[in-house]
Length: 151
Image (cartoon, rainbow, N blue to C red; front, side, top):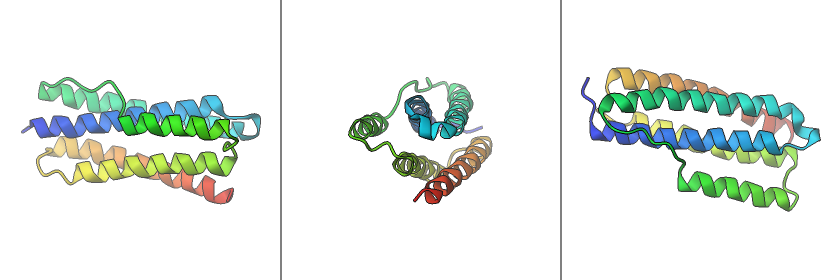
């Protein structure tokens, strides 16, 4: 199959950003005010999508003989802290929430684009990443459409 240390590193980076995304959407769903409660199901679905991605990516890392990541990125942790601070100062209107979610979606889209630039991933890994990328792109577009509808 031709797994390399670099492949495990790329997959682990994607695990971390998917963990960030899952935690971010879970926190956003938990923190929603009554006027935005309709977003709860969307955010919970996207959190689950990333948890499913992590499970799939961790299995691929395990096949390399490396240990899958279990944590988050420093930037993701800082982004969630920023959202918490912003919300505490009244930045919790629907447009603001969705704009922050879209920023996170932009980051994960970039991570998948970068990962797919790697040459030695192997076709099975590339296939998984392309499938996950399709779901993430669709989610990004849905969040963007919601944001634009409340501009």
